[in-house]
Length: 117
Image (cartoon, rainbow, N blue to C red; front, side, top):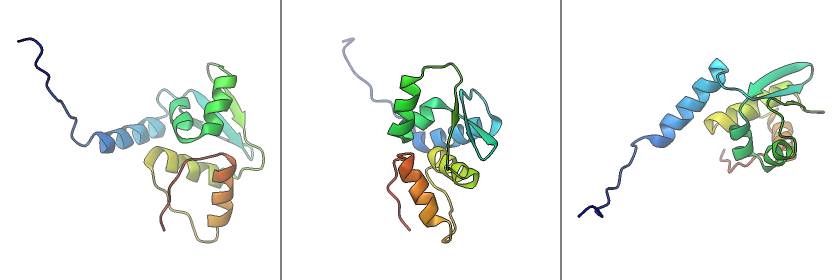
C-alpha cells in the first residue's frame, strides 16, 4: 500500500524561475562571479553563466575560485549587459545596428541560443 506514487507539478515553474533569476540578478543576491570589460563590471551567478555557455562553464570549472573576476577582452559593455539579460530572461531587445556585433560576441562566448526575429 505504501508504494503508490503521486505526480506533483509546479504550475508556472519556468515563469517562476525566470522571475526569480531576474530578481536575484537585480538585487545582486548570491552573485559569485564578476565580469569586467571596458573598465566596468557586472555581477552574475556561475550557475546561470554555466547553464547558458559552455565557454563560461569550462572557464569556471578550470578556475574554481570562490568569486572570480573574469576580464572579457574586446567585449563591449553594452553587449555584455544584453547577453546577461538574454541569459537571465531568455530574451533581449537589440537594435538592428547592434545585432551583427552582438551575435558575434555571443558566438565568441558560446552563448546557447535559438533565436527568432
